[in-house]
Length: 269
Image 1 (tube, one colour):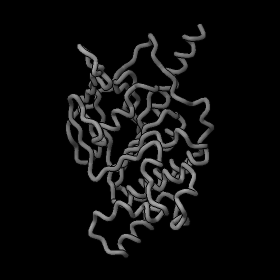
Image 2 (cartoon, rainbow, N blue to C red):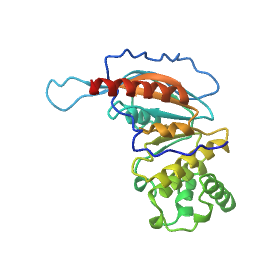
Image 3 (cartoon, helix red, strand yellow):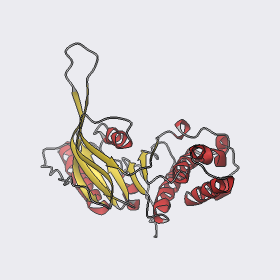
């Protein structure tokens, strides 16, 4: 697959898009299909503070989504709309207040900060770290590590010290560790937020290549950068704790850009 180049991201962040213009919420039917890797049905999540007589604060409001197996999808929306909360529920790090979740296993959550996840001294030892729970021979471990690093474009970094890597390279090591464990679903939380443009592109290509070389891997990537949709098969757009639109990447980008245009006209009027 030909991967299009990314444009500079400084002007393409997802701005708050609340306006008086009507918004149509996408409806996703909640019936399990064989080729679905990730599904959430009528998900709600709220939390209550420790203050006396505190009222629950809703974060997610009746969210439903469905992502086909073997595809790279992105989850977008303004800050505070519930993207990361939804991803953590899909990962099993949070329990929804109500609703149902299905995610193919094994699954792996890759954190925004790779230093929370990359812990071993060298690249190959870090990728192999999670394989200790499997009954693998040494040759099988070496093969899995080699294949995973090749998928993320780090074959020449096998013996490199992790401390010498850039942030983007560390992210790719974390992704390789998940691939080495034969994860079927990658849940990726804003991996490019603190990366320069070179590392941003490298991490995106690593995920895209991982899916292109294995039909069994599905990825959901949380982002606020519209230009990253160039790499996606589909996308989900959220506002105010709700899934507003769910579909192909080009349509989602057009929808967001139209809303941004309306928002800009309103604040300039």
